[in-house]
Length: 203
Image (cartoon, rainbow, N blue to C red; front, side):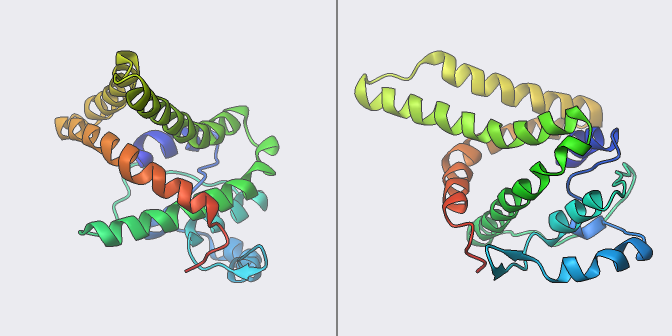
């Protein structure tokens, strides 16, 4: 979903906002120009050594290079297969996303207006989902019922996104990604809130 929808759309403007580590390739001449900045990645005065793929992508865009998406590229990577390592990975990714989003905001006026909306939407979307979930939880505790439209809206948005992916890929297994929504609400949103409050932590 992140590659075939999000990054494919960003590539229309020559500005993929994160070239994933396992399958990113750069011109040696471009990398040589930015190597010192890339190796000296700091956040609030402290060394930062995660989220390097997103950081390098932003540096490339700031230097005026294009970042592209190749739909038929194939790469192997290692992924967590247990909950603890998965949550630690997501915590690192969340901190990296927040840190480099701050870096990217200064860059956005030079890029297409769509990319500004895209970056804002990526950060505003989870915030709105968190607020909706908190409002529903508060109503449940106070009144004893959850507004049906909250659940319906979240379910509808989930199914639309998964259905588009399933139809485009011609693989209906993508509908199973709808199960990610409760994981997102109950595990990842609190984790992202924690990440936002601990941005300086590079452990």
